[in-house]
Image 1: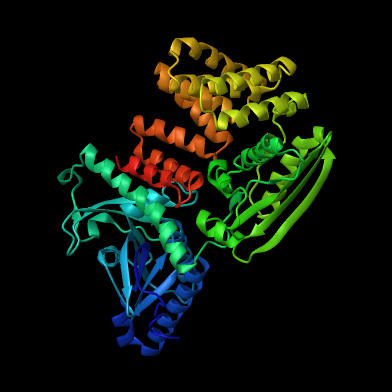
Image 2: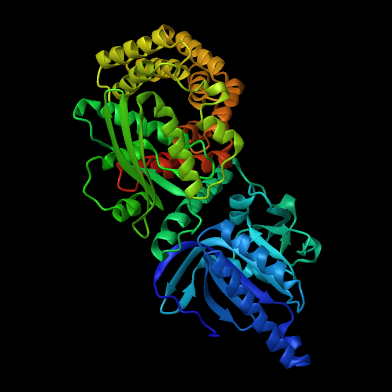
Length: 539
């Protein structure tokens, strides 16, 4: 076993940095050299085992200690927990672990950076059997199920010119150090944060969380093997009529709307993937640009009352088809096809699919989420196509007329009400039409949609947005936006709207997490809007 695992790259990056150290190793060597060597071998075996499982990289062994980095805070913490859980068994290894999120630079086999120094300092104040983390790590893992922490207070660490909040992980097999026994602790009343400092800290955490997953993973090809990120490309319209594009686009948008109901999937938005319509790029190229592990592509042919949909799910890394299906159905069965595609993808990717998620994908209670009339659905798809690319007031009027026709044909089609309300809310408002002309009608349309289908996320999103932006009904708006999030936790529009609301409400930590997720799903790094959104977060 080599004392040093030399990296094959040279770069500066953000990483979750983990230091380990065997407590009292020098004394062990003096008492029983053979036993001490067996202890250090066991330490290294367990470290390497779990570092590999959690996508980390061991950079150095320091005699009785080690330094490793990980692509995410969560993976570093999970790795530390599993290491300590195994080392409490015989032969026991009295190990202490410190974890920090920070900057590292690796060059010519040497590792350095302020982040490395901080992680080493955190580890050094721990006790055997403990895992200590900085506040940077704490804020990124605190909401994960199964991870419990205990605040130890603020510490003055060697060569660090500001107090550092430290937390201990808590579990039945871990040791939580007694704070009075730890050197460097500062009494809590000696340090006071201003609102501004807290806000800056949260923004730093948000950016760190984002770039550690973008830059570290991309540069080291350590993408989580369990990653369930997917992009649905525009399907080819194989109908003889090019004007049928609205139908093809609408079908795929509804497939995406089903997929974002599955919390275990990370789905790119329609606005991001539509740039690849009629593209000449390879699947691996698109996958790298969108930073996804899987791509769904295919074709749609509509002829009279018949429709053929061919769908293919591709593993980006290997550029191989892992699932494909051809659906030859009556046009009235289009909703079954959309649901089947979403559910089959969840199965193939082994995504967790709850009973509620499955029910919502199938159409909600009594399938009220589906139209009773296929013509009404066609009108909604046409209206949605116009709405997505409208240029003037005439376009808005045409789209509204189509939604009215859909409602007239099928008064139980909740999504027709929501689309009309959305056009009134966003279209007329942005076009300069006075609020009083449309706001009551838009709210009424949202209420009607919810009454028809209480599982329709876009209805709660519309209602929450109106109440928040136009009437200042803060608490009612929050209830509606959170309801939309519970129904479609992966929808970038829901994430962005709720995140923006929470920013205005002063809940910066929760807001930052949601906004980062919305950016990841809504844009790729070759879009100007991507940088604009990050700029707005800085602001």
